[in-house]
Image 1: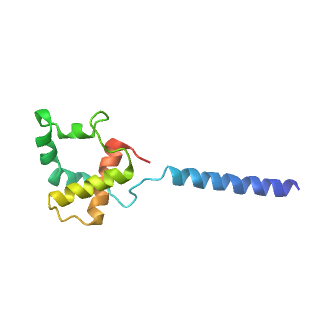
Image 2 (image 1 turned 180 degrees about the horizontal axis):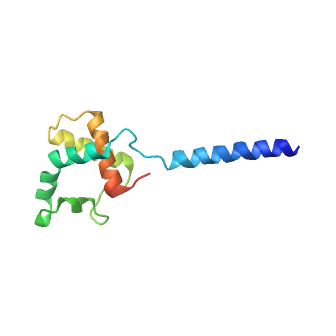
Image 3 (image 1 turned 135 degrees about the vertical axis):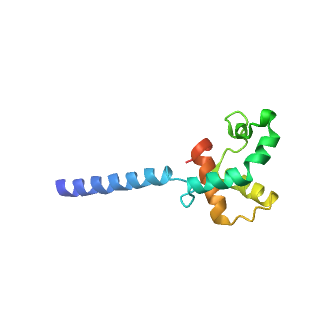
Length: 109
């Protein structure tokens, strides 16, 4: 009986650990931050700087100015901007930039 309880407790512990790691998983696991940062610098910064007073485009990502509140909105905006600038990015580049923005500014789980 004691062995059975130990096994059940161990299995439950593993399950809860798995659930918590899934819940806190990186939303853009295929994205590479360094690649996203380079793409962002090449295609996004100049436009964002032109939109903000004093040319401080990074303020778009500040807690007070940001409009993105979910992972889906963030990725959708990156896709929108990529299309608008005719960057020619594929899903891979979208994920890199989304990962960079999330890790640097948004911290969505």
